[in-house]
Image 1: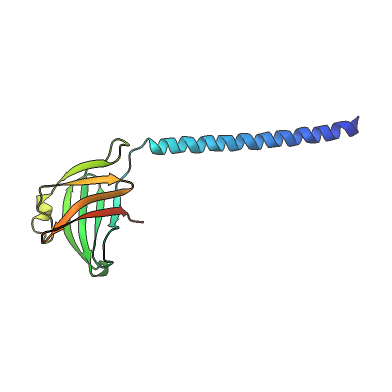
Image 2: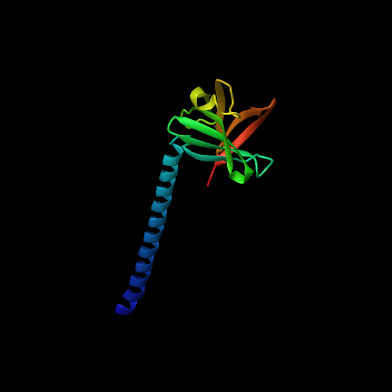
Length: 152
């Protein structure tokens, strides 16, 4: 009798261990899906540092910082040694998941009126889409679309 029960017990034990592994994998999958759903239900967080990705030069590009309710953009030259203010304005964080997210920033005149390379526009339209912030920047009669990605 013991000879018959031993293989059956071993088979039953292997079956139970196999089921436990499957259940834990299923639970893990369920938790991952749940975490992804939470991440997808929260609007994008745009706070932080951003750098231009479509610059034609490693020596001249724009960077932005988004903090609280302000976006600040600088021209960067001389291998990063020189920064010149281009824009300081309001920032409105996204409240929905809808992309593209577009907001109109009002220029902080006090912060930009004395900056030689700053935009003189009263407002500027920004777009967040596909993990990038984009806007039009102009200087000396030339306008280009700047695309920024979060800096590492």
